Length: 125
Image (cartoon, rainbow, N blue to C red):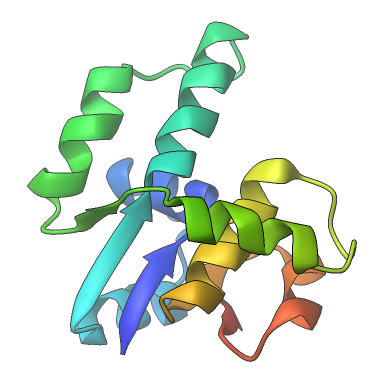
């Protein structure tokens, strides 16, 4: 299965954080391809600018290729799909990740239980 990481999981992966569960690491290792959305880079950049995230945006960008992951650009069709999603979750970045996962399709790895009602593609780790 091809996998999309939510922003938090990607940042934990880059930091080799103990918060990244064995279950998440297993799914990442077993995936035929792992994607990081451009939306996650955008979200990280905003958090860096607000001083809520203390990392270099260059490290976040370079971490995609350095990890063997693939960048998932945001397309117009993926963006449009957000309008069809119910409001289970109001975070615009998470809603875009859901739309991307559904459109591609990709398994979305997350720790955010509020995303689970959207699709069977959402995998809580």
